[in-house]
Amino acid sequence: MAQFEPGTPGQGAIHQTALKQFDSFIETRRTRLYRVSSGMPHVMWYTVALGALINMIFFWLFDLRVSTHLLLGGLVSFFTTTMIYVIAIFDTPFRGEIGVSPEALQMVYRQMQQD
Image (cartoon, rainbow, N blue to C red; front, side, top):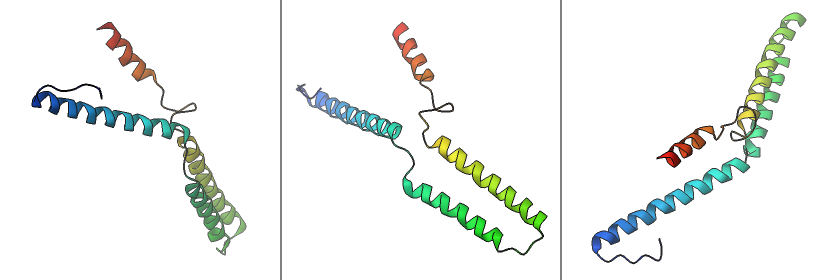
């Protein structure tokens, strides 16, 4: 595409648009490939861990009966643990059991090959 020399101004405009679209395609592909290999930033994990620690300290400050304290602490701990688990699973959306599969793209590719 870079070696093509347009003969008319119309071809030049179409060629310029095609080059911009191709550049956009390459940039989008590069971003997608980067996101497959990268995960959530470490700062986000530190924030989640700090939030869990603050929750534990917060409930420790309450003056409650032991049974109530254990119930509230257990519920908050369960919720926090569940959220950390969900974040860990969604950290890599293109890998794992619940990851995005390539089946839809493969189906479109097969349909394009048939036409």
